[in-house]
Amino acid sequence: MKRKDGRYLQLFPGVQGTQRVVTLPGGWLVDVTFTHVPQPHAVTVHGVTVPTLVVGAR
Image 1 (tube, rainbow, N blue to C red):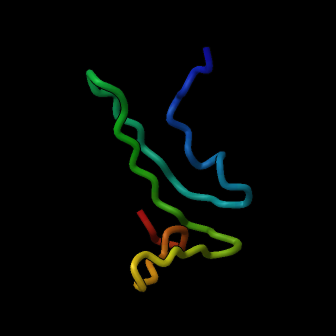
Image 2 (cartoon, helix red, strand yellow):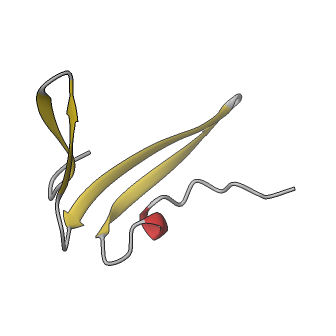
């Protein structure tokens, strides 16, 4: 079985930031703040563009 550990910054190559993982009875609460993003990313939902991976995003 694959072990999940809550380290999300490693999923995005070149992205730097800070993260805090809080263990809760039912899982984790992960607070990630991006400080360096080589290529920003945004998604469009129902005609509205929402930035998802930009500097300062949380």
